[in-house]
Length: 315
Ligand SMILES: [Zn+2]
Image 1 (tube, protein in one colour):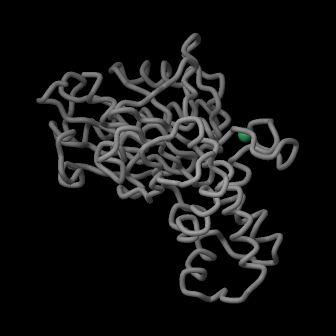
Image 2 (image 1 turned 90 degrees about the vertical axis):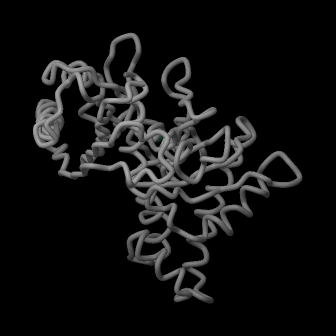
């Protein structure tokens, strides 16, 4: 790693693009926030299609370079994006920002900027940052999970992402949980994402139990004990936690990680760490459950920090 460079990290999401610039030597930081010298967030505007996204991201990076007076030889750029890169073709696959799929997004952005860029799956970036600085920093094998609008996962072994043969290691969100059930954007039915995302909780558990709130609003009400003795709310939570237990115990049975770190909107729901944990314990193939299931500590910025770290590691 080059100690004199600044490191740009970008979290390219379906609705927001976040960018940070980190001072050199940040990988040894005790508190990563002390190393942030620039931070900005813009709308993704995914509705305008692929060409617009290439321009939007390239212009945003160019703007950061100019604002921070950075040149290609004194900075690195790492980008976390939804989906993965097909090694054979360089095109994106498995992205819920569907206009990116089967497009050479990486190459097209690099062509615009004429500087080397590292791309990685956003859940992998999140997992890496949490493994290095966050809730997973004292563990060797981490399974990081984003329970947000979608569901993503990443595996980090000794502070390095495990990409897998096809760049899909940790893509647990599209493992089938209940066959032939809820439709998923990926074309399959019954994916983990259709049971554990915030949008799934709102659509299937809350709305179907007559609770017309967002997942976030419900979770706040739940924590302030507004639903004590409310059967509909209890049922919504019980269903969600049961699916969580099934899905997470499957991962533990295969990987048996040292810790599972949860990020994304649903990771703020306290019932996951109580009732959800009990269901994991019930379903796991063991007579006890030692696996810590922890909430991420880097907040919304884990993705950009992980992306910056990948860029830095490549220099
Ligand atoms: Zn799916």
